[in-house]
Length: 141
Image (cartoon, rainbow, N blue to C red; front, side):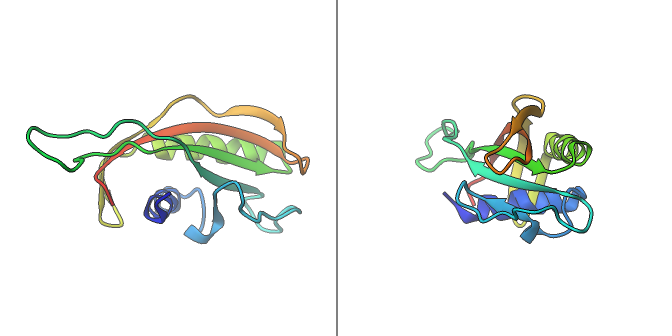
């Protein structure tokens, strides 16, 4: 799991207005997330979990991958349904607009949202949960 991927995706969320700074994005399933509602807006939490990824892309006669295709699950959790849904839809829109863009020095050919945000009920801490998956096509970082 490359830390660079999380920094880059967090920066995309920051630039798109989903979070105020990259430290507001939680990484991995072991992240220590708040257990009570934030006092400031937005009242939702966003978490990125690395998936398996797809096969790398190579150009003719190259030994190193020219593009890699990591996948991520995007989880948005919170206590107010409207805030959670709004953040999930905004994150989906922001990721889906990435085309031919350099983020923190790494070129992204595209980020593809693999499905719309899905209402997944409540998590084990009784927070409302929306999730969707993305696949990036990017230069190795």
